[in-house]
Image 1 (tube, each protein chain N blue to C red):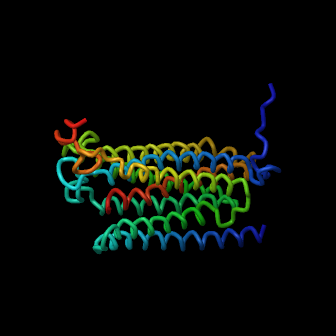
Image 2 (cartoon, rainbow over the protein chains, first blue to last red):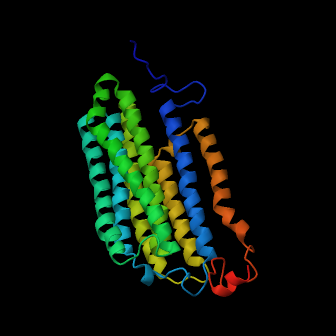
Amino acid sequence: MSVAVLPYTVKPHPVTGVYSGKLGTWLFLASEVMLFGALFSSYVLLRVGAPATGPAAWPSHAETELSWKIGGFNTLVLIISSVTMVMAWASLKMNDLAKARKFLGMTVGLALVFIIVKLLLEYIPKFQAHHTPSHSNFFALYFTLTGLHALHILGGVIVITYFIFPGSSLWKKDPEYYTNRIECTGLYWHFVDLVWIFLFPVLYLM
Amino acid sequence: MGDAHADISKHVKAYIGVFVALAILTIVTVLASRIHFSGSGNIVVALVIAAFKASLVAAIFMHLKWEKAPSIWWALAICAIFFVFLIFLPVLSVGDLPPQAQHGMWDVSPQAGAAH
């Protein structure tokens, strides 16, 4: 049985002018923009429509008890993880697989720090304080937006871990193909960082 | 290969620069939220800083600064048009309040409900 080989994994496609994985990743990210965009749009609708007073009023920072210190810390963690991700790609471009794997490992480590902080310092205390998604429109949006974002982080952890261990065997067979796959993974990872850049002020500061 | 290495070194310098800028702008976002601007000034300031940070990530980390393929720019342009429409959808609901609702769209008071 012959193994099917994907075309244009390294060379640019003559029609699109770019290797196919990259265009595919950007199209996927465009659909992600619409997914998160719909939720941000819901946020605008619910916040603008909230009454000024009464039980359905938009909660103040004192009421939500969301700590900007924890949110700010996690923002820095994700920014650093974006740097380590892009440094992994740069290391591959300089033919250094060992260094790239170290940077990918750091990215996974930082992603896990983000998840652990979110879970232990935010989600669990919120549930203990009965600030559940059913508590108010704000918390319904908070958990939907940050929960969907956290799932994206976990998805990234799985993909990057795959490329550190079994996926890295591709480097021996076709280093450029492997480098391109890391670039596409990076595009996704930076997008997840980019979403958080908006989530942080919207949920913690506004 | 030597040229490629020189190019990548330039990239790496840009990555470090963007990291410093993003860290500083995160602090600026927090500080700006403590100043009381009139009207919806705080929201505008926070979103402008966030948009600038997002542009830095997209341009440098996501390599758009060096991206020449028209297919990617077309995909992004179409995405941007739909995104703007999506974000401004709630504007269509302005003035959509039932006449009985005294306290905004989500007025759940018995008076507002009883009149339906």
